[in-house]
Amino acid sequence: MSESKIREEIVLLGKSMYDRGLTHGGTGNISVRLDDGWLLTPTGSSLGRLDPGRLSKLDWDGRHISGDKPSKEAMLHLAMYEERPTSGAVVHLHSTHSVAVSVLDGLDPDDLLPAITAYYAMRVGKLPLVPYYAPGDPDLAKAVRSFSGKHHAMLLAHHGPVVAGSDLNAAVDATEELEATAQLFLLIFQHKFKTLTPEQIAELQRRFPQR
Image 1: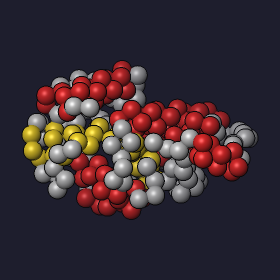
Image 2 (image 1 turned 135 degrees about the vertical axis):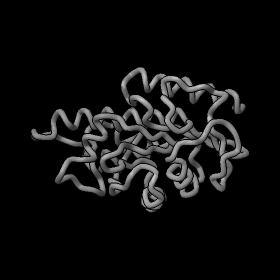
Image 3 (image 1 turned 90 degrees about the vertical axis):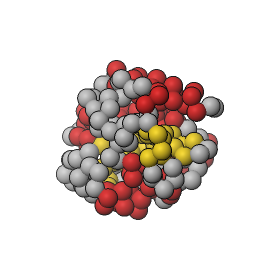
Image 4 (image 1 turned 45 degrees about the horizontal axis):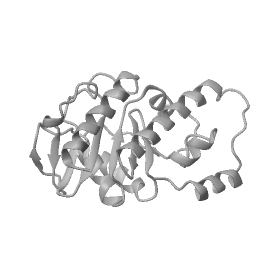
C-alpha cells in the first residue's frame, strides 16, 4: 500500500474510533510502519479530525522528519516496533472501559481480563498491566518495552490500552475487542461467570494466530 493510502487509512479509522466514542478530545494516537520510517498522529490532535498531509513522519531513531510535531507518546510506539519487528501498526487509546479496568484493585496484573469470549482470546490473549507513569515519561516507554517482547497488547495503569498488529486494521480490531471485553467484564465481574477453558483458548490460538 502506498504512503498516501496509508495516510488516508489512518484518518478513516481514527475518525471511526472517535465517532464511536472509543477516544475523545485530543486523546489517543495511531502509528503505522513504512518502508522509510513510520507515521504517527500529531501531538494534541483529535483522531476525529486528522489531516492526512499533516501526520508526523519519523525515522527509526525517533527523529521528526516531516509533518506536524509528533505525539509525546512517540517513544512508546517506537518501543513497540523495536521489540515487535513484525508489527505494522500500533494503536493507543484512552477508551473508557479499558481505563476503568486499569484502575480496579485486586486483578491479576499479569493477566487483567478473563477469556470471556472466543474473539478476545483470539485477538488479545493475555493482557498485562503496565505500572503507572506520567504520559510522555521516558520510563513509560521503558516499561512498555519490557512487556512488548511477549505481548502485543497491554493496558497502561490509569491511562489506556496499547495494541500492536500486523497492520492497522488488525491493531484496531484488537483494540476494539479489548474495549468491548472490558465493558462486558465491568457488567459481570461482581457476579459468578464462566470463562473459556485453557484447552479452548489453546485451540483458538492454534486455529487463529494473532495478527
